Length: 586
Image (cartoon, rainbow, N blue to C red):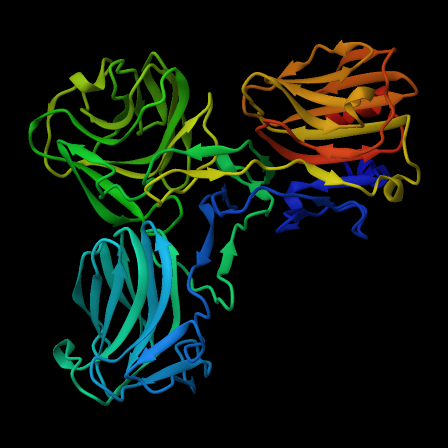
C-alpha cells in the first residue's frame, strides 16, 4: 500500500479496500467532495458475481413479484376472499402481516406474472382458523402444486417441482417455498385450506406476509418490492470489489462481456444434464453458502462415472469451461470435451493440483470451504459437450473416458456453478437458470469529468500516475488501462496482452513487464515536460524523452480488459526517482 506521506500529496486517490461504491458510481477517497468519484456501468441484468470478504460468491437478487407485501392492491387479486386486511402481527415483530378471510369455496389470492426458468416461490404463512395452505403455480408446461400444514409445520407434499420446504421462523410463522422448472409461469395462487387440503369450505382464514419469486434453487432473504421488482445484493451497474483467491483486501474487478452457454449452471438434476454411471442429489452447501449445490454420486457399476451438459455446436471456437467442485469420497476428477477430440484435464482435489492435460490448458483455483474452481480452455472442432468425470483413487494419467472403476454407490463430489464461455480464459461466474444463455455486460471504464476541479487546470504536463494491479489478461490485443487524453494525442497507457506498457504516437509502444503470475504488482508513470519514466515493482524500466505527456482526462479501463485494480493515485507533480522506487517497491 502507498505510505501516508505519499497519500497526503496525491490529488486523486482511489482505494478498492475502501469498498466505496453504489449502483452506477464508485467513490474516490480523495478528494472527499465528490469531484473525484467515477461513473460506472455494466449492463441491464444481474448476471455479474463477485467473491465477498467472507470468501463466498455474491450475486444480484431480484424479487420478481410486484407489491410483494401489499395484498389488497393490484396486481394482487382475490377470488372468494374478502379484501385482504393488513395490520396483523407478523413474523418480524411488526404489524405488517395480512389476513386472508374466505367468503366462498375454492378461494385464493393470486398474481399474474410471466417468468421463465428455474424459480423459487416463497411466502410466510401462519395458521388462523384454518390450518393449511395450498399453492398452485400455473405454467406453460404443467401446473405446480404444493401444500403445507401451518399448524404443525409439515410439508404435505408437492408435484411437478424440484423441491419444497417449510421452515419455522417463530411465533407460529413458517416460510413456505417451492422450487420448479416448468417453462414459463403465468399465475401464482395461494389457497387457505382446511384439514386434508379441503378447499370446499366458505369461511375461515390464514395469515400471510412477504411473497417472493426469484430465479434459482433456493429462497434467499426476502426483498420488498413495490410498483417495480425488488433488488438486492450485487446490482446491475454496481462496481465489484472482489476478494477472490483468499485476498484480505479487495480489488476492483473489471471484465469483458461474456456469455455462459451452459443452459442450467446450477440445476444438475434437469434434462439439460445427462448422467452416465452417476446420479445427482440436491440440497448441499455451495460456494455461496446456500443449499444450492448438488452431489454427484457414482453408482456401483464397474465403468466410467460422469455427467454431461448440453451440446454446443460452434466449430473452430476457443472455449473456456469451469465448474466449482468439492471432494466427497472422490479426490480426483476431470473435465473432458466429450466430442470427437476428447481433450481433457484432470485434477486432484485433496491438494488442489493439476494432474494432467491433453490438448487443453487448465488450472485449479481454491475457493471457500474446501471448494475449488477447475477450468480448462480448448478450441473445439465441432460439437462441444462439457463432461465432469469422477476418477478412481488409483488414477495417475490417461483419458478419463477410459478410467473405468468399481463404484461404491455413495462416493463422488459436490458440484456447483458450471460455465462455458467463448474465450481463452475463465471469467467470474455467470449464473444461468434460463435454459438458454445468459450474458454479463462488460465492466465499463471508470470515467471522471471533473479534471479541472480536481487539479485546478485543464491539463497537466507534470504529474505521476501510480496503480497497484493484480494479474490482468485479455485476448492478446492491446487494452486501455489508463486513458490520459485522446487517442490522436497518444495519451493512452496500455495493457497489451499481459504487459504494462506506455504508448504515444511519437514513439509507439514501450517495452513492458509481464504480470502473468496472479500476484499484486505496482506500476508508476512519471511525466516531466516531455520526459516519461516508467517504474515497475521498485525498478525503473523505461525512460522516454520524446513523449507527448499532457494529462487531460481520467478514464480507468476500457476495451476487452480483465483486471483487478487495488489502488490508483494521481499526483500533480513528477515525483523523484527515489520516491517512485519507494512507492512501487513491493
